[in-house]
Length: 75
Length: 151
Image (tube, rainbow over all chains, first blue to last red; front, side, top):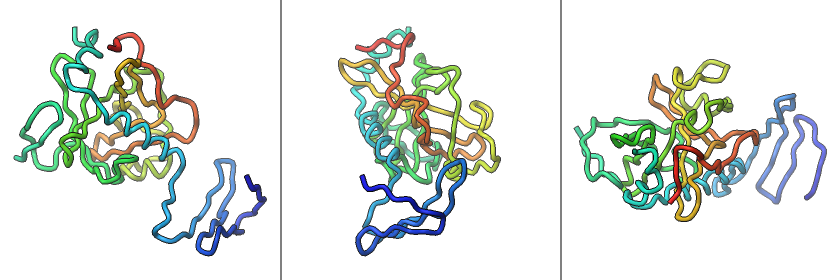
């Protein structure tokens, strides 16, 4: 991984079209601004992870199988 | 009245635009803006979250305090803003918001609850967001012990 030190107001360019600017740093974290073409997907990484877990959670079995999974609760 | 087509319960009558509104959708389901909570009598506190737009899309949830009675929310500012929570502090579960953990039910695995990305609904407005935590205090796949038996 390339590691760079930046101060607030300074930027990094990735390729021709993507700019990442460090806007503000404080004890809560660093605020960054991203300029990129609309076609570039920009996502907090944890949202991608959450999406993968959501896809699994959306694959629920038929109700009879669910009832077996939760039979203690229903009794 | 409108008709809600559901994954498990056939067609149900519902008031137009009822249920929870998710302005941002859910991660991986960004286009799904409305989910209707459905309780199956005798199966409380299990709560189904049925997509209003997609009949075959339904999530199963537990109130998050059922999974972890000591659970503490940590909503990011942008998540609070997304559901119209103006106060700077964390909302109170049960008073300001409903907090639900999505469950994963897979054959041969224990049922798990997603405590890293609770679904949080503003009780006043009915607006919801899946608030992915910025810390690593909880698990995306917390096995649900006790009340629930895997197959």
